[in-house]
Length: 496
Image (cartoon, rainbow, N blue to C red; front, side, top):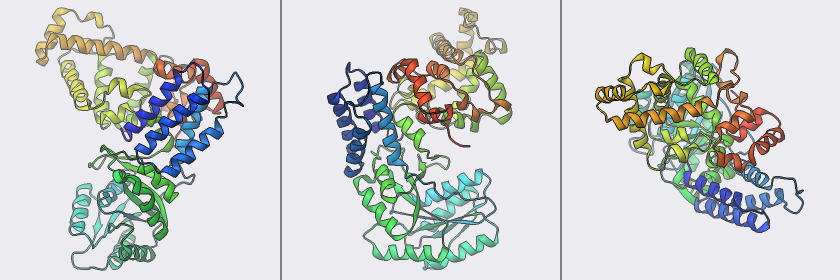
């Protein structure tokens, strides 16, 4: 997962504090010291870290807290909200409207992945029903137009550029005018990469912005840039009106904390993160779910959204009905494994489930887990309809298991292992029995119907303990006002 190392260190600091018998000034300072160290190690700029530390100390005044207060939870909430504040400038980015032409200009450092990100951004909006187009105004880098042309052709997006014209302003203006005439509602202008030392390229960027009058300027930043992120992002902000940030290469081993600094420098929200080279490895960035996943709290609504993308609309009511009945068959397990594989990288999917990342997806074992799921599916392919539709694992006697093993080319012990996995998942599924089903079987409303009782069943025991048990979870929900706000704590509550 993105910034997994940082998240692990913060979660570990919180866990250590949870194990302390009495939470006093010393325990709080120890916890904050570990979190500060983790943030600095991840390249978050020092002034930001210091400000966060001071804010948490102001919020958590241990002397003033009454004896009945759950100090652990107040500290955790303060850390959660301060991390959110660091990543959220408090103003939304410009959102393009369908059927109304919008010009979006991409700027950023050399090698940040701007051209690829332009195509991903266009492809994302194309899937949402927009009519995007790409303009290559990068005349500085050799091969820039070829790369954009190749990416755009692959994604089926119209593009404009020139091999002979060297004036980027002229290309940008011609391209924007042409696509406006063709009724494109999202025109994306890719510019040359530059860094703050290059005054001429910054001047060129200002001229392109002046000529095309973009509705939104997006700053593309490589997550591995480190402590230089703040200064570089600020230099761009001073030259053009940066309105949003996209962070790339978040799938690497980069510390990635510089991303937090870029938000502070540009005072602009992060709108997407690039998590790989493929066209669909591009995620909408939402602050609360991101911090939730960072702290190991999961992102339930993000998981439901991903599931919604892969489960056909007409099958959603049926799946939710089965969920509320708590009746789990091998066929359901097979279908869910299929959905899981379609949802993208497994480590990313499991990081959305509260407390599940460490248990279900040990670090560096993604390929192994994926192979195991495919192996289980092969075994299930050798089962009869009666076996797939049964929720009774006792029906699998020795002769049935030997037949399944022979048919799938596996060992009997592997079939037994698969049935053990089925029992474990069936137990988890049964905990959702009685979940209130949204009208029309709408999956996106599922997270809003999760009450404290269901949430306590889904959460791992150690995490429930962190919230102060069932009582702590209920008072947290009350304190946060509504189920929707509470789901925001766990990554939910997103407006659809």
